[in-house]
Length: 287
Ligand code: OGA
Ligand code: MN
Image 1: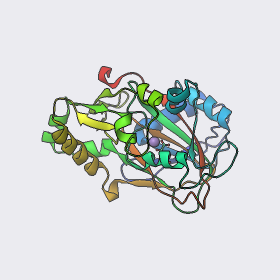
Image 2 (image 1 turned 90 degrees about the horizontal axis):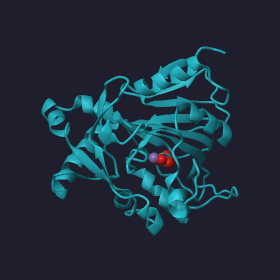
Image 3 (image 1 turned 135 degrees about the vertical axis):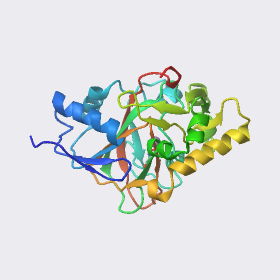
Image 4 (image 1 turned 90 degrees about the vertical axis):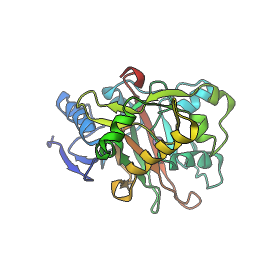
């Protein structure tokens, strides 16, 4: 097989990877290259892949323990590793702008880190594009590692010891009602505000729409800090916008990246991506 080639996509993070077939069993060498590239680039895009749920899950298991998808688990107690991103139902039908699940997924249009509201948050998210819209529906990314590196030293010192409360009902309740059983399965959790990559020692701050408040600060002062950190990470020049093509597989590191979905017209276009995640190493408070 051709050697993998890695082409950076943005000055701070992100890379396109060619020469690796993720549907085949990866060699130990390629697996190590993928792991290193996650630590280094935070976002990897592998175009031209050919996967189904089974091969996607097999690849996921090479990276770690699959995370149980929280929506179906919280609502029905069902164990499933995948979620469908987009507007296509299980019967293949298109769901329009007013459909309940289309509205529910608009919560993804706020900057966030996947599963930051879980006690053990996600390591990476893996998303494979089956059908993609012609217009809109990009996913945007921003690096809280690059943003941390740009902070003045005094602010780095100020945020170092802090923690934040992350709360799914706080963030998503603003967009659509959260079912009572789902809400009960996701109590608010405390997360470190500054995290360190265990392999490289690189630091980043850990925020996003689920971050509700800073522990030990009044609500408004905490919000000002969280909003300031978000603004510093998501200036226009900091953002990498990924326009999806069918066959793209993206892996993003939720420990240090923020992402958000961009709108598209669900009445006119089809968007279908299958997504799963790898569980993090443990609670951030124990890192
Ligand atoms: C997600 C998500 C963004 C998008 O599914 O976790 O944030 O572009 N999606 O749909
Ligand atoms: Mn997400």
